[in-house]
Length: 397
Image 1 (cartoon, one colour):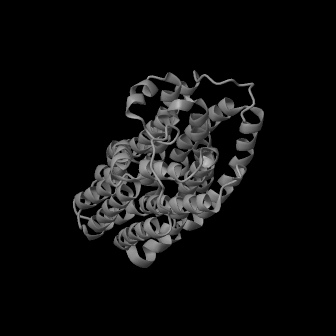
Image 2 (image 1 turned 120 degrees about the vertical axis):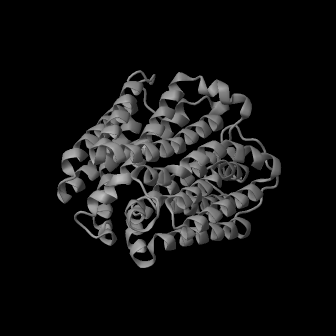
Image 3 (image 1 turned 45 degrees about the vertical axis):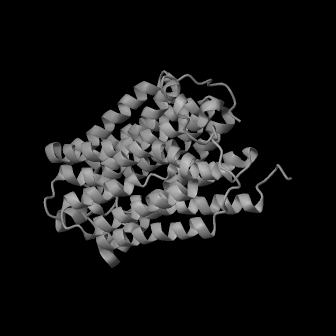
């Protein structure tokens, strides 16, 4: 058997699973650039705090249930648990679509997050790929999440104009059901399911991995990153709406995202080829904090917002690429799956904290309060990584 590349069955499984996961994440992300404006105009009981809770609610249930869902898939079968998770996500989408109050949407978003299929998807990918190809499969699935985010941010304002936010919830519920069809008709069924320590959480390893100070710094980093970006979505659509109708917000998001991706690529190459991951990580976190500070004066100008959004997303995309790579390299090989599961849990918990705290800050301190909160997270993160143990001169392979 060829060990150099994936077999056709491995490619089929990887692409299909990446598609299922990206459709679900697309649904979670698509609400971000449009919900704050919709809620203020259309829902009962709205407060800035509750808008933030609604934006981030999925993160809490996702964080709480991600590892348990993975364990359930070990016992009851991968496909069965993934299908149940997608059904729960679809139910949450329907609840949110039908809701006329902010509390109904909060419940719907929490229900969406309760369909926590990340662990079972990774476990199924591990079942369907050889160990030599597993890293490639995980990388493809990981990249699909980033693509989902960028597509969601760009297309959501136009889709909102056509079908409204309730229509978006109906659409993403339908995508979840389509994902179930892909799961059973496209994704191969594994001959047997094993516990893969490089791809799944092992309950007995959770405490030991959490005690690893280096990994905790990375967990705090991804929590901070997603707290910051989720909090920003509480207010950035409101700022842009001062200059553009919300259906045209993609005029800002598309060039900003494209240029930011182009800008971060050279730094990724330098970090990997020259072993400079730590200094580039420090630089990216510093840029993130600077961008958060600059949002305060920049929000009075559309051009100012565009420039600072470019700086922010350059840092964000760079960190989204570096952090999983660092986690994979620094986690103990025998507990890599457990380390990545804790990392993902911290990521989703960050989304909940950022949305909720960002909404509260907006209610009490206005736009400036949200951006200053993001700055504080970046400063705390910077202090945490200054003590990160990583060989600066070592070439990373």
